[in-house]
Image (cartoon, rainbow, N blue to C red; front, top):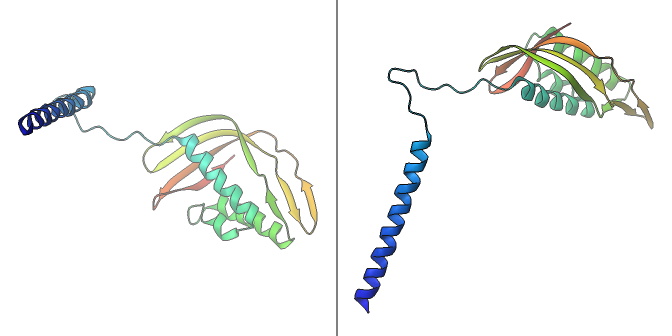
Amino acid sequence: MLARRLVLGSAAMAALSVLVVLALWVVTSAREPAAPGAPPARAQPPDGLAILDGWDSLRAEAWAAGDVGGLRALYVDGSHTGRRDAAMLRAYVARGLSVRGLRTQVLGVRVLHRDETAVALSVTDRMRGAVAVGGGRRVQLPADRASTRNITLRRVDGAWLVEEVRE
């Protein structure tokens, strides 16, 4: 009986070993070997539209909360665009208003530059759905007309920040 268990246990271990070897072979053979002397593969540059979409969501949150400091933190230090955006939000906050539902509808995008630390885009977009709320008032803000701007984002301490937006 003990001999039979040892044989069955050994057979199970052998089968498991074969499965592990096969799995390793499949995984390693699926990779393309690098050409001799070729530089190691580099990570793909980031997707500019995905970065902009995430940034726009954070901007909308700052506007909805009336968080001027949080909004400024989305821009590179010294950004003229950041100062203008913060001044507009400060004016809304001073009147007791917040802006909710701020959405950017991207109509077109062209990548001008993209690497691990910077993304430059030409973006045609418009703002939609924003509502100013405060003091018992709720005012639908007019939809923005489509416009094209060049937007430069920089990666600073792991976060994507807008450097400038130019018409």
